[in-house]
Image (tube, rainbow, N blue to C red):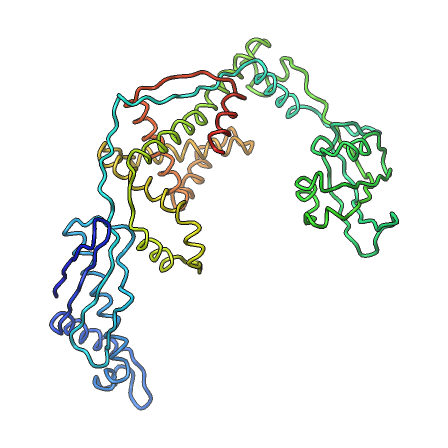
Amino acid sequence: MNIVKENIDDLNAVLKVKIAPTDYLERYNNALKKYQKKVDMPGFRPGKVPLDMVKKRFGKPILVEEINELLSQSLHNYISENKIEILGNPLPKMDNHIDFDHQTEFEFQYDLGLAPKMNVELSSKEKYPYYSIKADDALIDKHIDYFRKNYGSIIHPETSEDKDVLVGDFAELDAHGNIVPGGFFKTTLIDITKVTNSSNKIKLIGLKIDDKVVLDNLSDDAAYLFEILQLPADKLKVTSLQFRLRNLSRIVQAEVNQDLFDKIYGPGKVHSVEEFRSKISEELAVMFVADSDRKFFNEVIESLLKRANLALPESFLKRYLLATNKERISAEQVDKEYNSYSDSLKWQLIENHLLKTYKVVVPAEELEQFVINAVKMNLAQRGMQNASEEEVKMHVKKVLEDEKQIRGAYDRLYDQKLIDLFKNTFTIDKKEVTYDEFFKKENNHTH
């Protein structure tokens, strides 16, 4: 077998593979004999069909399969042995014309997309801002309100108020205010605080069981009403609904006292309002580290992408996307989504370069501990704070057997390793901001 690589430019090459009978005849004949043992044809006992008949009837597909397998192995070995860094996989040239009926020698040509050369190094001379979110009094107050509501009690008063949750029947009305026979009807709940149309909101306040009101101008609350009713936006524009109250609930917020402290943190862990606020501040600081890290990470990624200024073999990659996408997509879709795909690929190339250059690895025991911690947190969120060791082990085992979850865990760990690498290498300009300031910056950066 003869394989020759011809460079077209820095990002594209062609592999020419010549195959002679000596390269494939032995494996082809062995494959025929194997097939002979299991083939079943009328007039012959299983496994006793003459080899010539097997060859005549099944020889071509067997030959094609063996040559394809030989090509796959040979291309892989050639690329690996010659340390050719490629993007995707080799693609057969569009004008490969092979006649398996008459040819005995074959030449196949494959397009290669070559990975761009990269020189990305990290230096302490580079400076990046790192925004830490300060848990100010306003944010702590919001969190206390959340706890008070979450640990509050539910009552069912006689008359609705502006923060109640109502359960009732929604029925479609015609132009004359009559219920449409066979029209839209649904029993569901509606949270008055999520209704933004002031006219409809006022109508929902002061209701008693079995009271009826007509809600219109529904398109003002299209997103929320679609969520609870699943009525399409075009229907909401022209529809009036009658709402009949069936039940109502009101959350009476818990008092900020020792009973609330004990419910949240356990008996005797927090003893005063000051300690309660301090504890919340500590928890928020830990919780916001992930947000700060994500913003920092995204800014570094954006900067490295600009600095690397990588070129990619665009035509090859577009053809590769069309050829390998599991769902059928058009060339127009590929053109539309290519920029997003290429940015993702560029970062992947830079990331792999950094992981290799700076010898970043995630040991198996670190992955397992990450999974254990994630499982314990998940169980706690589901009310199983005191799950037994056996229960934890059972859930951990399930996660470790799920390839998709393991890949996600590795991705998160490698991201964190890179964040730590960046923090320890770059000069970091720490800036403390409020919650609102941080997410205003985040939104402005996104848009």
